[in-house]
Length: 56
Image (cartoon, rainbow, N blue to C red; front, top):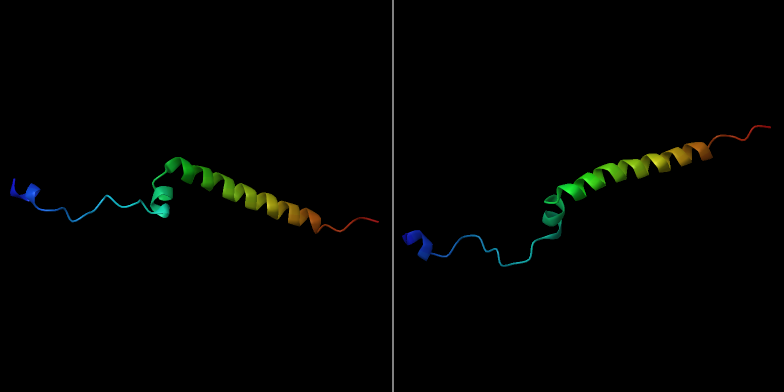
């Protein structure tokens, strides 16, 4: 019981850092993990289609 009289080592009164809030949210990580590759593949596909030469 003497341990409760001493101040704790961790001070939780400060604001939570942004990256900790992002990494603690599994739905946000799922959303980013699905949308980022999808957007990159769409951009890559558009670039590939734009590079196809026009037939004469």
